Amino acid sequence: MSGSKTQPEDQQTQLQIETVPYDHPVAAQLVHAALTEIGERYGGEGDETPVEASDFEPPRGTFLIARLDGRPVGCGAWRSHDEDTAEIKRMYTVPEARGRGIARTLLETLEASARAAGKKRIILETGDRQPEAIALYESRGYQRIPNYGYYRDDPGTISFGRTI
Image (cartoon, rainbow, N blue to C red):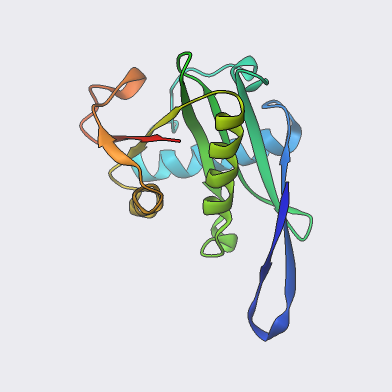
């Protein structure tokens, strides 16, 4: 799964999306960066939702990394929430690569992967201090749903869902 993005001045950059295990070294590096940023925005250690590497093993889930010209610049994953529903986790783009459609491409690829695995719906949690994430999800047709899971009672949590 790969695509290309054209940059100004006809400078070609190559965006590649690849599936890796959750505990792959590059995945671990990107997840650490994501959790660090969440910790900085909200305090604490970042997203404390319990996850296991096995949550993201096909066919029950998948973990993707994005590389721009070979350099890791983002990640995202889905895991099974129930038989028909996938949950998006660990969406992240490194700051210097933001604004290039990487998160959108990751999200679209995750949606396609979940659909191919038989999922009919996707849910996710984000926070009220992540306006760029909220804008992305809303632009893809996600709608607010009641909070669920680990952060169901957290007043700063915003949950979204979408039929795929």
